[in-house]
Image (cartoon, rainbow, N blue to C red):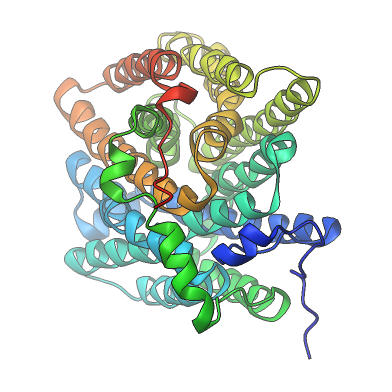
Length: 435
C-alpha cells in the first residue's frame, strides 16, 4: 500500500475542519507535495513552449501551410479554452479537493498529447490545442488551493516562488528540449515525449498523495462556506479586478516569450533553432530563480514586521519596471546586446512573479475563496496568452517587424505597474457573507 504524503498536522483548527478545508500537512510532507505541484506545472508549461518551437520549424509550417497569422492562431488556441475553463475548475477544487480532479484532467492531457503526435490536418490540430487548454485548466486553481491550505503568510511568498519556478523552468527546459527533438526526430516526437513524462508524473501523484476528497457529510459545510462569496461578489471587488489586470499585463510578456521568442531569435536575430532554445532557457531560468529569491526576500521582510501588502506591492512594481528593459533588447543593433537584454528583461520581471501571485491570490483573498478567485484571475492570464500570441502574429504581419510587438509589451508592463499601486488595497478585498 502506498504511503500517504499529506497527513494532517496538529495545528488544524476546528473552524477549518468544519468548513471542510484540508488540514495542513506536516512540514516535510508539504514541501514534497509543493515540489510535486511545481513539477506538474513545469510539465504543463513545457507543452505551451513546445508549440512555440514547432511554429519556428520550417517543416511544421510547411506541413500545415501556416502564415504568420495562422501561426498566431495555433499558438493562441490553447489559451482560449484554458481561460473559459478556469472558473469551473476553481469551483471544482473548492468543493471536491485537489487530488482527484487534478489526476482526472492530467490523465486527459496525457492522452491528448499522444494523439497530437498523429495529427495531419490543421483543423484537428487546432481542436486538439483547445482540448489541451481545458485539461490544463485544473493546474493553477488546484495548486493555489493546496498552497493556501498548507502555508501561512510568512511562508507563502517562498512557497509560491518555488511553485512559480515550475511554470518558468517549463519554458526554460521545453524550448531547448523541443528544439533538440525537432532537429533530431520531428515535431511529432515532442508530443510523444511529453505524454511519456506526464504519465510518470501522474503515477507519482496518484500513488503518493493523500486523497482529500471530502466525505459526503462534509460537503454541505463546504458548500455553505464556499457560498459565502459568489462569482458576482468576487467581481465587485477592485482587488479581484486589479489581480486580473496585473495577471494580464504580466502574462502578456511571459506568454509572448513562450510562443514567439524562438521565432524572434531565429528570424530577427539569425540564430539557429537549437541556439534559440538555449537563450530561451536562460531567459526563463532567470525569471524562475529571481521569482524564488524575491518571494523569499519579501517573506523575510514580512516576518520582521513589515506590512505584507506594501512589501509585495513594492516587489511587483519593481518587476514590471524591470521588464520594460525589453525595449533595450528589441532596439539594439548589436546581437550580444540584444541577447543580454532579452534575458535580463524577463529575469527582472521575476521580482513580480511570486509576490504578485501571493498578493492577489493569497494575501488579499479569504481562504475559502482562493479557488474561485484564482480561477477568475486565471481567465485574465489565459486571455493574455491568447491575445499575446494572436495579436503579436498580426502585428508582425502588418508591420513586417518584431519591433511593434515589443512596444506593445512595454505599454502593458507600465499599465501593470499602475494597476498594482492603485487597485491592490486591503480595504477593497472580497468580502465574505457569514450568514
